[in-house]
Length: 156
Image (cartoon, rainbow, N blue to C red; front, side, top):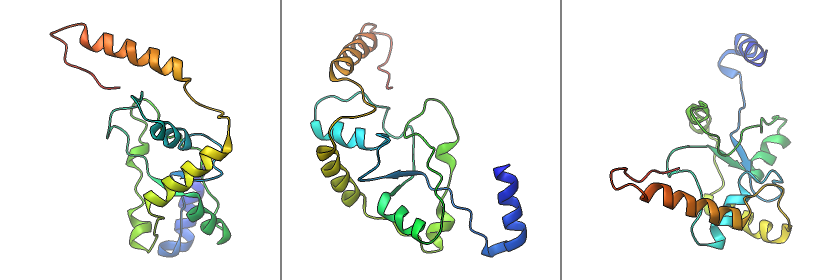
C-alpha cells in the first residue's frame, strides 16, 4: 500500500514529488535506545560486543534535523532498527537525491556529544546488554574463536 501511494504521488507530481524515508533519527530525547546505547557504551570504554566494522551502513539523521523537517510538515518514518542480522536491504537505501537537492546534516561530532550528554542525564535504559552478560559473551566469543588453530578469527 505504501509503495502504491508513493507511486501515485510521483505520478501526480512528477519531479516535484517528495518521498521522505529518513533512516535512524538519533540524538537527545531519542528514547528508543537504538543509537544512544552505543554512544554511552563506547564512551564507557573497554571491550565492546558489537557487529564487525562496516557490516551495516545505516544512514541516520540528527533529531534536530528531523525536527526541522517536521516543522515543514514532513512526516518521519522511524521504524528502522540500528542493527539487524542478515541482509535486510536497509543498507541499500540511498539519500543521494536529497543531498543533491540540498539536504544537510548536523556534523556527527555534534550529534555524538549532544547524545552522550543527554544519555548521562537520562538514567536507566530501556534496552541494553547488561555489563556482566556482555563480559560473559565476549569471553565465550574469544574462547570460540581461539580454540582452533585452523579456524581463522571471526567477527560478529
